[in-house]
Image (tube, rainbow over all chains, first blue to last red; front, side):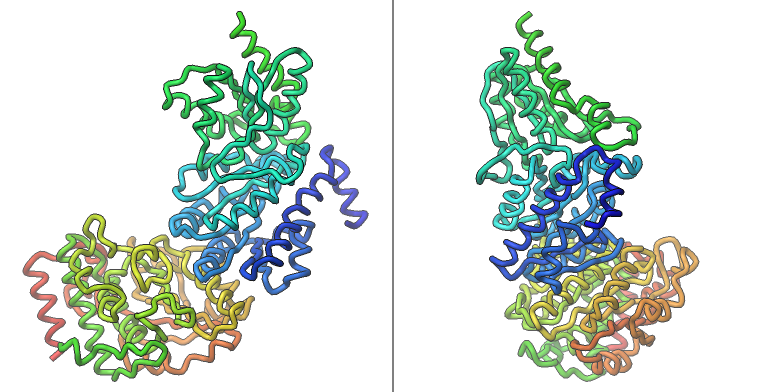
Length: 330
Length: 292
């Protein structure tokens, strides 16, 4: 990275190191997969030559297709490659990949059940400094109604690598939102990811904290705060939004009676909505608190400021959880 | 027409050397089969199928390298029906070549039938990719041509586009990528029948000059009468080798509703419709008279 780039990164209160590492896991996993099999292709619409792309480009220059600033084309080209036996990855900017390409994802990838992995990088609030156009907070709502598509949010870099591998092994259409630059590590070792299954990271008895993506890391931090004040919280990584692990949601609701759902997504059309639907369909009464972004105009700032503004902090989540528990006890 | 007389040799990779006269009769047979299938279904795309009948006949009975006994043969030429709404013209060809039983044609458009108004690759052997959403298939073709390059295979990918489809922005993203990546194994054929739903194509949104636009995007282009079977054969017989580096656009000037006089007179009325008994009889008589 040049000095000029570092200076550019300075105004951002989130760490450029996290961003670099977030890209590196994508680049590293692509290289590993390409070493194991000969059908990996990387397609990117002028996404930039950083740690997510450069290792692969240098090692497999012929297997890298830069489509220029043409997101729709990149997804349909991937469909053509997949139909002829390849396993393409499309790497796009989170604010644009799902919103611009939802039709190509639906019609060309998902309806034909083709093994394409779509990676949303710098999604959520990661590019929130650049304007409302760069908020990527609607991918669950845009993609959850597309049959055969798997939709996953990676909680951290370990999860990201594992999900990429799981997707290639499963061989179907897959969308992964890469981890937030503002997140902390959640996983260690070699965690298991199974399509459509939640991972229970900690078992408690008073309240369940259900997160996805950055929300999972925040839930884990909130659980630590709650523990210090005598509240025992279950922590769940809802890694897959589709298929959705409704069984785990229902079990947690029965066990604890109170759920706090945390997502870096429009809260009116995301994980909280999925959880509420699941409870309604299951006829389960539980208290539900939603932490996410409002369905409204949003502020423009670096991610850390935006997360604080909208209550996406461990402290705010812990406070909501305490309120739920308190309501039950009173 | 005697089906036996024109049925192609199913030798797969070899060209099927059908005479210009055979191919011309094949195109008329495609029109008749289109009318018959839509007659059973109750609704279908007549006039935009008729504009492409000669193109389909020459491609499938002469140009494409295929092995119907092995629909997934890796070396086969790919054919993508960008203007997916004319699948009704493709079905009799694929049935005749042996991709599926001819009885399937009788259930075109019925609930749960594999043969639908737009083609689905998951339901029908011989369909290389699904279509229905205009503007996508040229991009898919770019992907397939990249796959051919990776696999060091020499087949071509043909994409049949409508001229109204050229309104779609993604199509020009694909055109840009095809020349940038030097895909001489990609052939786009534009069925330029001059009509989209709202009127003459270029009154709705100007697309001319089509050939020069493709050239400006780095393609070679050739403009021909899309109903002149001899000319189609000439052009498709001498395509540049697939290992060359410039994609080819064939702009086929056609008539929407070609071959049925009342459709030629009011083609948009027959874009999507259903013939009553007297219309059907008149159309079939006109077509058969040219097959004597």
